[in-house]
Amino acid sequence: MSPTRRTILASALLAAPALHAAARGGTVVVIGAGAAGLAAASVLRAAGQEVVLLEARERIGGRAFTDQALGPDCRFDAGAEYIHWAERNPWAPIARRAGVRFAEDGSWARTLTIDGRPATEAENASRRAGFSGLDALLAPKGGDPSLAEAARAGGPNAERAAAGLSRLSLGEDPERVSAADYDRLWSGTDLWVDGYGALVARHGSDLPVRLGCPVRAIDWSEKTVRIDTGAGVLGAAAAIVTVPIGVLKSGAIRFTPRLPEPVETALGGLHMGAYTKIALRLDPAKVDPADLGDAVSVITGGATIYFEMGPFGRPIAVANLGGDLARDLCRAGEPAAVALATERLGVILGSKAPGAVQAGGLAGWWTDPYAQGSYSIVNPGHAEARDRLREPVGGRVFFAGEALAGGGAMTVGGATLDGERAARDVLKVLGA
Ligand SMILES: Cc1cc2nc3c(=O)[nH]c(=O)nc-3n(C[C@H](O)[C@H](O)[C@H](O)COP(=O)(O)OP(=O)(O)OC[C@H]3O[C@@H](n4cnc5c(N)ncnc54)[C@H](O)[C@@H]3O)c2cc1C
Image (cartoon, rainbow, N blue to C red; front, side, top):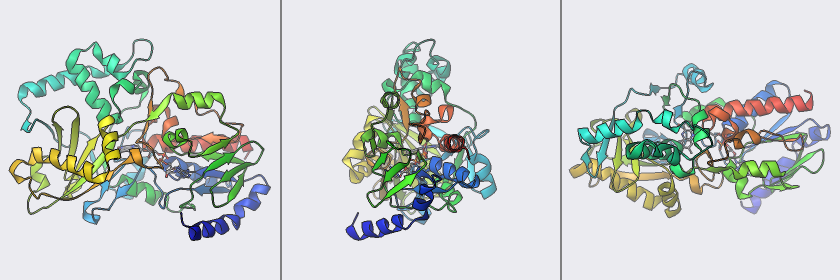
């Protein structure tokens, strides 16, 4: 941040009415303007509570983000794109009311390519066999094994299926995922949204938020919580911290005094997965994505990459991958990631491949300082970690976000519900 910008921010913060209101003990500061922070601020504001919303980035929405870097006709959701468990997800009615286009899961065809050729009927059958009964297998019969361990009893097909599911829906290798936590995730209809990030940003656009304002320290040693942005200090009666647990674990926000041991233990039981997308802009003169089917999984020498072909009619292909391969690609950087995705897409395109990809973009959440991963994963043996984080610290620092959302964890809907929950908890404590 340049000195000029720091100065402007400092004066903006110091002039803020929130500081005066804080003297009356009434302000709640919400840190992070993703789905959870926006929901918390909205509930607080509706209750007439003075609220200040601070966001590190120059935009709201957090990990729900519709990226237009490849051009407006090539926009894609770099983060969330499905409204999961639509039957109870608050975003399903919001999306319907907003008239957003979406497709229901199952309405698109998936094919599998192995080593540059379509999978044979026998290969497809063994894959189907791996997935059939997988849910029952992964439900732990006692203890809290990893997904890899739980799948072992089902043999190699089940192990392969569990690994694919783990990497491509959780973003993590199956050895590092708690089966008990996986088992309690909500399921239901998935709606594939054309612009989930844009919808979240539009929905939260009327909330006053201070952008470009990363919080660096939170001092909760006294009754008034002091929140340091590096450009000024805000006082608050309570703080709701919605930054991803990757950010919390990195120490990017310093707590004084240190977080209590139960909170540290809960954080120790969680880590971030690395679900990653690489979007490729296709030359429509060379290749029509409509000819490629809707979605293709490519297995070439190990990890599966899943391509969405021409989502919502756009001339793009979006590669999805997770686990350590995704981490390595994020560290290697955009050109290397785009090169790998282009090479794997070439396996599908065959003779049409040369020159078909015009540009590419990496949604590298693993190396993003304000995310530090895709979404929260519970380590095997730590199934209670999400609930433990809901305990407020000192009665005035509250955590919220997808990581605390129980069965709704890892999703925008869960983050929203948990943000609302935290706001209600704060209102109770403040007696508002
Ligand atoms: C690739 C990918 C695919 C996904 N797919 C889906 C999907 O299909 N469906 C679904 O429901 N979910 C999906 N998710 C998960 C979903 O995006 C998240 O669960 C949800 O958006 C999290 O919301 P949140 O408010 O908890 O956190 P965030 O959205 O991360 O919000 C936290 C905010 O805090 C800000 N912040 C960070 N550090 C600081 C700081 N020091 N000071 C101030 N602000 C800070 C961040 O910039 C961010 O805006 C996906 C995520 C990824 C990465």
